[in-house]
Amino acid sequence: MPTQQPVRIGARGSKLSLAQAGHMQRRIAAALGADPENPAEVERVAPLIVITTTGDRVQDRRLLEIGGKGLFTKEIEEALLAGEIDCAIHSMKDVPAVLPDGLCIAAIPEREDPRDAFLSRDVERLEDLPQGAKLGTASLRRQAQSLHRRPDLDVQMLRGNVDTRLAKLAAGEADAILLAYAGLRRLGLGHLPKSLIDPREVPPAPGQGALAIETREADRDLPWVQALRCETTTLAVAAERGAMAALEASCRTPIGAHAWLEGGSLKLIVEALSPGGTERFRHVGESELSQLADPLASARDLGLSLGRAVQEEAGDAIIL
Image 1 (cartoon, rainbow, N blue to C red):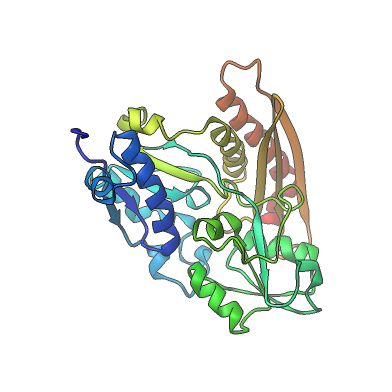
Image 2: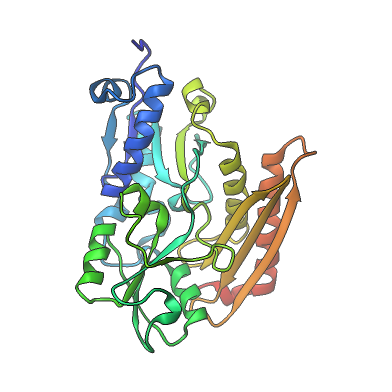
């Protein structure tokens, strides 16, 4: 039986967050030497602590109106710095580009499918929606990308957890909605989308589909942390978040980024749009990783380079 101190895990209380955290809780317990199939043992060595964030409490406004994506991490990071928890499980796309002093993203596990999912009662694709149809989303990126493809759509602000959004779709408050396919799969709802959106044609949010294990800097390389890392996912996310950092991306900047490994190369697509979708700025690049001493730095540099290229071309056109 494990004898070390428990690793206390902080996470939000939404159904999706608990599903993600529960999966990682079992992984952490196994890395600590516990039986991941024994719930009592898992809870003993890796207890899950639910923390309500400002982003969870305020559901009637876009994130950009109440302070940005950091509102999904702020209270959890405060608990981490105060020593009340030992790690936090976040959706990577909710993690701001800059972390509080003393904290780090210590591990990124294998990524789920990063694509956006299209859900509708009647049609298969965004292109099939009737003229002037209502599209529900709280994401400025999804709004801009959708209006770029279909400027006639009536985009409606739609926040709330996955169940809430699905209920609003069923009730006819929107003709279609867009959600992260990864979240649907983690909730056992991967059968619901009518179609999936090509991430090379319409890049998702930086880090979409990936989870972030955040710890204090001093705990970055503990053995249980190292056991959770996926090198391929870490490189791809480093490139995407490099682009995000270069663009100073927030909930006021509609950007998408998608990276993938192909042979010995890391390929990256970065795009930013005007909030109304009328203008799109897009750059593509790659980095050969096989001969590099520090592939992680190279991945981030690729993202920074492409992000800066987009920023120089777009200027203020991409800021809401």
